[in-house]
Image (cartoon, rainbow, N blue to C red; front, side):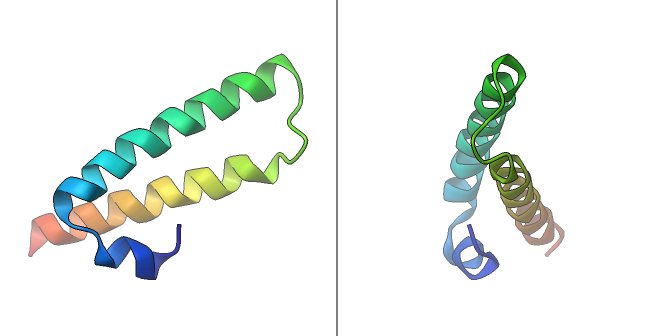
Length: 63
């Protein structure tokens, strides 16, 4: 998810998306632990998406 997409979402949508993304990340990590993923770069991309969403939420809380 790109930063421009994150900025367009509301706070409620961001919180929902953060939960979904964290769940997807834990599922990917578990799948990778069992057998290596075909594309392990997915882990990095999902982790960075989580960081983008969390950063935007923090930024909006401070305003």
